[in-house]
Image (cartoon, rainbow, N blue to C red):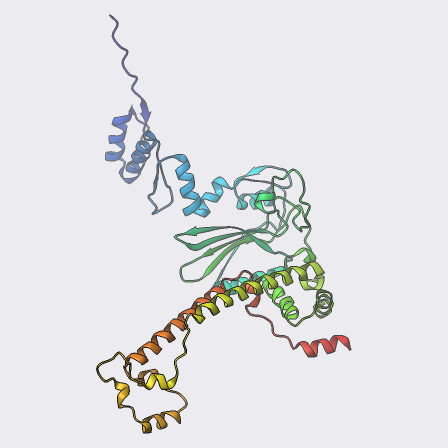
Length: 393
């Protein structure tokens, strides 16, 4: 009777001292003779044996149950690290496959000798200062970026990734036929990009490239900035139609480096549509709030407040108020809340005031959530009458 064959012993080599030994001996060898590096190497071997993957990001320590779990973890938690491995793109000049936007910029600078392909970095004290810088870049370098994706960690925005405004959005990159709707996007990839990284103290650090490849740059093809939209919205709210607004703005903004100099009627109609939609939603919110306020059906008169409650067996502090005190109070303009007596009627009034304040806060929060609310932020106030007279003369 034949004996069963002996299981083959896997012989491995230590990468530190290049000695050969079986796997179990190698694990002990790494942990005892090669310090922290050896312990880390032994841990990787054990995880590989169990088909697990440990996150290599410093101070993370996450152990993924599979390669797919590892990719999901890297995509959701470590957006910057994940980008180099899983954001594939092609060079628009030679179709070479690259792993990340930074790789595309470096490739075009070295291989195709595009001198403008340089990655730069800046830090701003807050998001508003960063927005003002982006608007200045649109004028000085004829470059604008559109949001392409965000990375959320624990519900807070940490990283925002922007693409060149002439690049198709991700979902249109692999269409076999061109879109029928008009668009200024003409290429699938471009070296120009912007990446915003938000810190806990409110500062914003950006990495960006101002160089473009495979398409031209023109102010007429730039998207409208927030300040541009505010200027247009200001005229529309004054009742001017699209044609008049277009003529007035194009005469006012004569600098050919600005987008408003090339303003079209379609641009104005889009802003008008957004304003109308925001107005309808605002009216719906106000109507809902009015219905909530009507729930407080019966009004409270001053005389009712000064009367003692009918269901109260004991006297209240309001019983001590005489006619002279009422006359003295009537001559004053304001009654501080602290001076109100602590009776049941006054408590009821305080409760209703608090409920009304809660409704007002809720209304304000909903208004701020309206789509396109940024059009109302920092609106440039223009004296419309004097401006129209100037244009007509």
